[in-house]
Length: 483
Ligand code: AMP
Image (cartoon, rainbow, N blue to C red; front, side, top):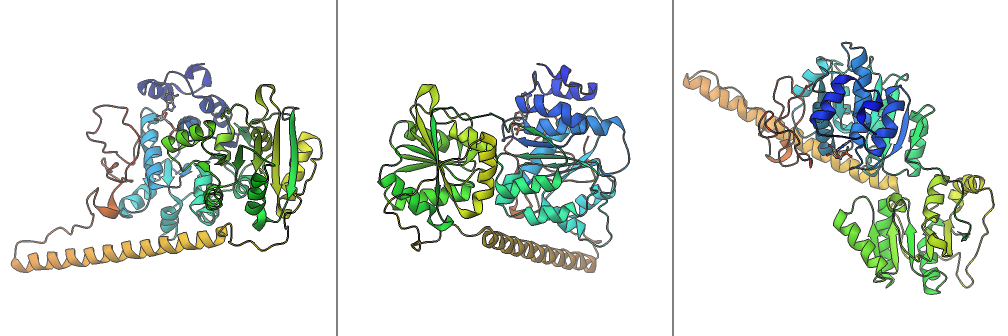
């Protein structure tokens, strides 16, 4: 398949050609046509899949169709680096369209970003915290009344970083009638419910639908109170009810916690999830395949695509939120005619997700209890710090950082003013106050929007992305607003 068959405008096809992209990636192939036609999307896609093109191409196509003088698209990203990277991709793909975009994120001055809002650039790419800072400024210069498209990029990462309340606050400033493109590598419960709130009849991508797990897999449920899950899992391992096993947890945090608990219990294990580097993931999988570790703790990222021969067991430490995810995970066992067992630990809070799974696979799963296990004991330690506590900690840290940055800016301003007054007294004319710190210097590294032709991007905290275009602008400087 080529890009020509995606029904994109000639300006976009030229940009794609300039970038040397010859064929759409699978997520681009599946996402572009429905998004171009205005449908909402719920897409499971990871970094590296070409997801940025998957939302930028249809978005640009739609905006190009009927230009107006309003900000018409908002892309929310969890980190400054990702915002900078998406902005860079925007500049590459929008270069023949005349559309303008700006990146809005913290750690750099608000002024040029305010200018971008006042100029009503077509596309705003923002982290939620800094966007809310702008939304709360006097003067009300942020105007989303003309907004047509909202993109949520890496929604699960935003959740992990405690941004869910921020996202909900941003939503209150956006028109309800809009197209929403929702991208997330995984679909933990809060993300599923956020997607339900935000999307209307979405096209679901990469959430593969498989009717049934293989017939030879024996499936069973192990009901247990949430705080005792780790203890029950360890007991199942110690009594050899489960052998070598991939154990899926709902979040990265829970997989880290489980791995720690297993290690303390003397059970060799490895972890694999989205925050681990590719090397760490490869090594974990190799150790598991070689039998060096008995348990591979994973989030559902690895449920797709891992092929481990003769895997005896899959344990769902948490009930998957989507029946499709359950079927996927359970499909890790019993490949190539081997038989396998798939166990799911179910807490009372998870019964409703479980019912959806049983409905999807068309049968009730048997429930088992482990003889000799004390189902009423008090766990020695808390398995998980509740998300509200973690979010509170992250928010407190962010508030502290913001206060520090504000203090620093005030100090610099006072210094510059004093300097200017001194120069004036000496009669050498007023000095220009130096309000902006240089790129790469501490908090101000990383690029963002500017009203002029040169918003610095890159710097020490800049994007991980490789430059693909030679000789443009010299040294990674990125204009914003751009287009
Ligand atoms: P992403 O998943 O959006 O972070 O993209 C990963 C990398 O793949 C980026 O460097 C993109 O520029 C590149 N890329 C995206 N789409 C394509 C494509 N269709 N052909 C070749 N490279 C692509």
